[in-house]
Length: 183
Image (cartoon, rainbow, N blue to C red; front, side, top):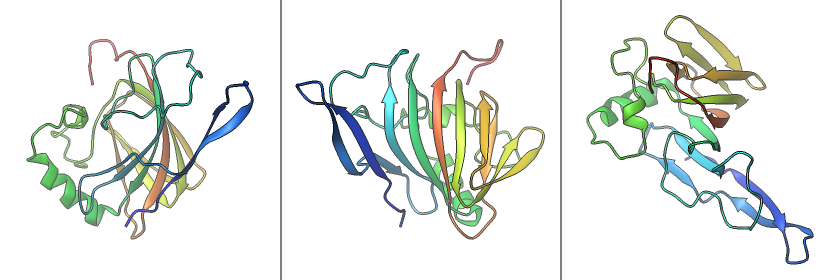
């Protein structure tokens, strides 16, 4: 069972004073099944500069991998140990595309890890707890709690080789695709 992620959101009242508009577990949680990652969506912006008007929940959509065009998405992902996750990825491989962009982003030809994928984004990844390997086409690095990785539209995978979940916070920022390539 994944731990709920508390989300506290601020805003403004009718007099323009700062207030708290939400405080509780994020209601935007996606998990495909046993052994799959758990994605908790926390916030999204749809333009730059961002629009801070209103107090509506910015995540009013179905899950999608990519941030919106010219926007951002903030999420926390719980990565189960690979001994659970790799069989879940194998089960998902035969499923139809769900429209989230996850299947299209996958690199099924990479023999190193079934989770390889690529997005048109700059991703700031902050390891909150546990440890996880960031894998590139060539090389890998072990990241531990407090470590940060800046992922710049590269083909990559995440590998948790421990027996405990790893929690990673991500801010994905829309980016232009690499010249000559798409995600």
